[in-house]
Length: 73
Image (tube, rainbow, N blue to C red; front, side, top):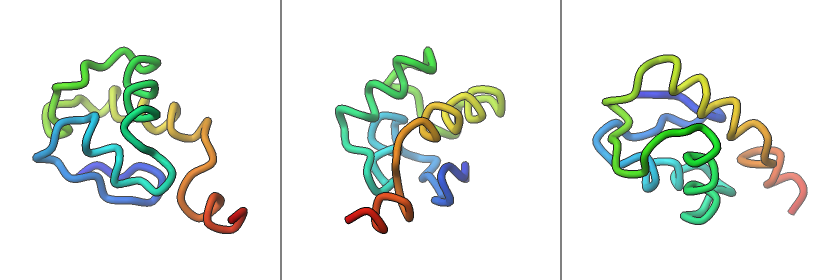
């Protein structure tokens, strides 16, 4: 299981859906993150390399998500 923004991302789901398990990331933002990272939406998380997961972490870090977003609200 990949860990992004402190959340375990489900391996068996497609990347565009799996990223929505992060609080503050919906389907639209998920698609934008994947496009910026250069990763196809239909790839499952389990098929990603460690380098691609690191790229996803960097892209997600550019947004206010999870605990920081909860504190702002």
